[in-house]
Length: 389
Image (cartoon, rainbow, N blue to C red; front, side, top):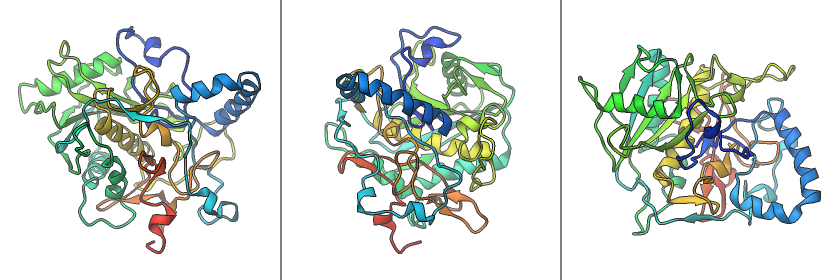
């Protein structure tokens, strides 16, 4: 859930929500988009090697219950580089016999999905337009390939106990703006739900309450801090509590990291200061923070659609620590992704990096797990997209 468990993740021994300003011990753990930099991954790999030598047997059990660490694009590698020539062995991105993604009999979003954006803080019109066009592209009818709607086709493979698939239709619904920061500029996880309550109970033009197909997307501006934000957390999803909001509504939060931690949550469009010599990739829509948010938003929407109440599709035995369909592919954006490389991406005429087309824009969005074939898939996979560039 996020950009997620948002990239190759190692879980802390204590869930992140137990370390914030408010105790949420009674709340089951839900997936977060996490970002890790290449230097962090190097240290993680060395530590993992030592642990493997000591506790190989325990590692097999651990892999069943915790997400794998995802990787970021390496800025010095470019599409077409001789080191990236791919063979048949590179087809199964993220595949593993140790992944046991299962259906736990809970509901998924089979009805038409309506996304209700809640813009918290100060947002420019151009920024809103990028995110709106990404959401509107999910159900595009005749998009240019590889497309956002092609990416959503993998999400649609998931079914509920009646055999009904995840909805094909994802539309942009009514919106609500809170440019006066009515809940302050520092939010806890619970106060994110209070933001939703304010939106659905507003005196003027309240958002509709749609428990069956509604998806409430809280988007915080670049000067708003949310509990655990930038501590490798870039977004999360869950459902609202009737005691706070009055309804049980699937929702997600994603923050704009442009001012607070772009090297954490907008990588590879920004790099940390402690990585001198590394060059960021050029964002496809010219906005480092918002382009970084798009993949996190895609991550959260895909997981909300297939696991809205945290009791449907996930891996692991403990629903308090679910590993969901985007978590399994965090950091993979193209063919060959895995290890220290996130896969082959594409470059626009002005040097921007992307891997799929929307209605009128390009986006960089991570792949998701395909439980039918048992590996991560995306619309720009070379075996699907050969000859169509």
